[in-house]
Image (tube, rainbow over all chains, first blue to last red; front, side, top):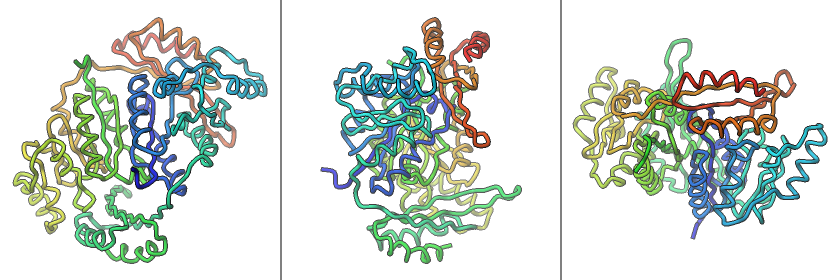
Length: 244
Length: 244
């Protein structure tokens, strides 16, 4: 039995693992889910390889309430996510009329020809429900508790708008964040540990930062407290600042 | 039997999953490993939770030649990575003299007091070898095929310098990248698929991009070809550009 709602993110694509592309989707999905009360508890990044995608999505779907995937649903030969999802959930897959109609209407407006390659984007597993794509037309889809979305961050963000109403969230978590300068983690670790023991319902974190300012190195720590009682968190702010 | 050398990255920390911090380490580790001929084939992000860390590092250590972890080795109560690694590999852990000596020398130079919290950073599993930290002193460590490093990107980068000589790489992969404007993936998908079938020893990828330039949306595609024969890849560049 899971005691809390949780989500996982699965990023699909050689370009993220190779370092060629800096992922932006994990962060934007987490920020989107936060006010819905659904924390992201795990993320994975896999290559454009069917068995890697299938294994990961099955594991994450079983362990979490919701899974969000990005990448691999475009028109090119290396876009294999839709077929991998069909395999993972034992569904058949083909070009589906509802998705094809969306593409036809979209491309008709711009006078673009629908090629065989573009029609690949209408391949949707049986029983999946479509996710609207307000940016480039080609839809994503939801299969069981998995939301399959595009990898281009602007398109991902657009698709999330059509996902929000499908999420049943838990209690919302609030955050207080305090930035201290000229402090090292070791200076405040003991005091922060005491706070954490006093307030076990609050999650405390500390994150060191370093900055070059005109050639001079500055350092400090960001302290973060996370919990459900917004008023209490506000009251903590001063005590966290006083650690600096 | 693994036919190729492969690596995995394990990012540890609530702050990445919450979206509060944008990870930069996956990319910099991948870029560091690329010229060593070690591709990153998988990455995971887990919370500051012992069983989550233990399960992930065991799975990745068994599936890949090398694992690189970042985060959770600082002085505060939420830094539990070192203890989790000891559990994962069945080792005992305590403050170790060699690590303590490094901290003492480092802090003596700056006249900083060694607190109990700072001594936590000298907790190293039995049998692990230290990884030098040229930025803030406190060492990382290698345990079996796992390199345990700090999460602050500047420190991670510094530690990688002391990891390079421990890596036995595979053949180096080269990359050719071509940026096309005013092209949609669907326009070139068929031609790119033909290239991919002609040259199965090359990995072809296509990545759409969108940009706002003074309010006007521009779009295009970046084509990437990756393989071992650098001269052949160079000869491909013109043919990829001709797809635009």
